[in-house]
Image (cartoon, rainbow, N blue to C red; front, side, top):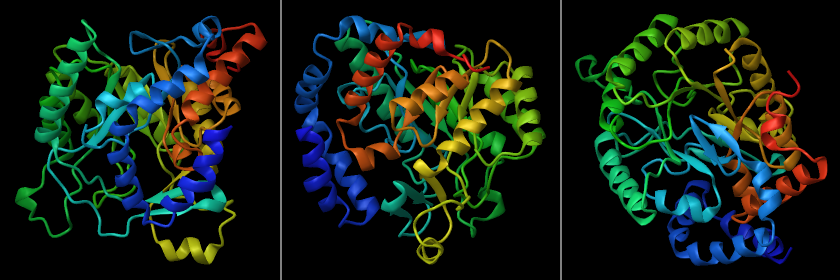
Length: 377
């Protein structure tokens, strides 16, 4: 397609000449200005597909979504693009990760492309504006969207994580993880959100992964006490998680009425890459995302699907780019998927093409996406 050729042969080479983080920031600034173009593109790709598109409906966190394709956390950390998510074609999206305190994250450079692997390594370290600023911005955006659509608007979700305190932060100024998460949640608990994800798996912070069972119990207990509106709560887990950790986590999630799981996050593993080991080693630590972790993320979906309760839901995240990737995740037990890295390599129209092709595939198979959820279990 012409738009695909233009992006891959003209736009992407220019962006890839920039530092990866600078290119990301530039892309964010361009998105609001391209809303009209995206609407034209949506009409082009999805024109006359009303019947097949209806086959993509799915249920997530008590709502009917028009299709299963969502935006993963990390793209819109500070809720600056909420009004643009629908124009990009997403059924839903996660803002964040948001932390209780404003932080600058880790030193630059901290975001790297691996073009040979269609992958990214990041060690951003949860940089962001902090819960108070982001909640005010998000609340205003949701109110505007709800008014514009003359009703409730519940396609925006929130991802929260512990603050990444710099190593030299005095002990007296640090928050316990349960206090940190509870503080962040308290700023958002009254907003009209689709769901809230608690990120238990970010590998790029000084404090590391939220590993201890007692810690997770305390976090969920504190959030539960604040959650008077019964916002659906999800846990985000890493594809690097051991079977033992998953069993403990799922057991705790059942005990605290967690709605579901986002599976997974980035990986610290580096095996199976085409990029030379010397180049990869020179980039340093960080979380790997994109095509190389597709198998890990799919395996995580399968493992958790066997452990969770029937009522709990799974959102698949990690290495998803094609129709086959989506169908594999859905058949393994997910009811929705999230994407991010694929857009760096495939371009802004990728989601529209994917939605079209997924709808046509459902039509070809004479089935619906709902009917495929957990079909391989």
